[in-house]
Image (cartoon, rainbow, N blue to C red; front, side, top):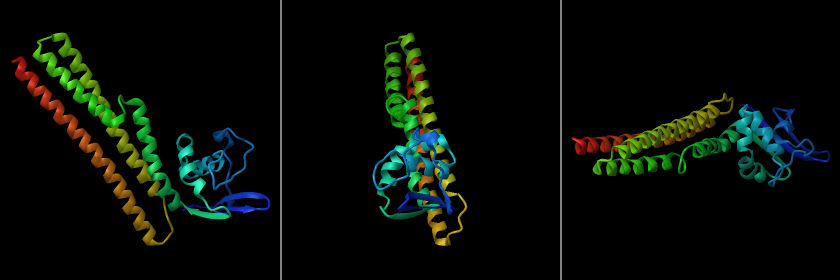
Length: 223
């Protein structure tokens, strides 16, 4: 497992990974002149380099850089610090989940998973009203919107599952640290995975129940 160390010297701030200089990623940060630094919210030069090296995923590093700068780099001790791979895994796990949830929100109406569920319920109501009024066009349109909303719920649930797998992937990286740390990491991975999977399952059950209820009532009214 990698170990990152930073030290403030007369030559400036030096950062190493497993004893070798950490590569600056000016190509990602867009800043070729800023040196590594920490203890405050700065240019993100160190955050970008650490995330890219640790995750091995440049797009993910860019999307998480600002939050990592605020929650991790800005809090590092002024003189020197050491972060193990386990420390970074613990720090980035919630950021990965939040980043994927944000991506879902950008592609799902009315605010992500819960917005899609609300839209599903609203369209179910429209479907019922259309059936009561015997307006074929309204029923058809409402049914189409309901199907679209159900698809958004499914896509959102898949994204939540993807976030769980990414958290698990980070926590599964090989470790040569004491067994107690490995056990703690496994427990954290299991808790995070179970939490997001339970949420996705609950949403899927809710969507299925709502669809079945509306379908049954619609058939009864049209009979």
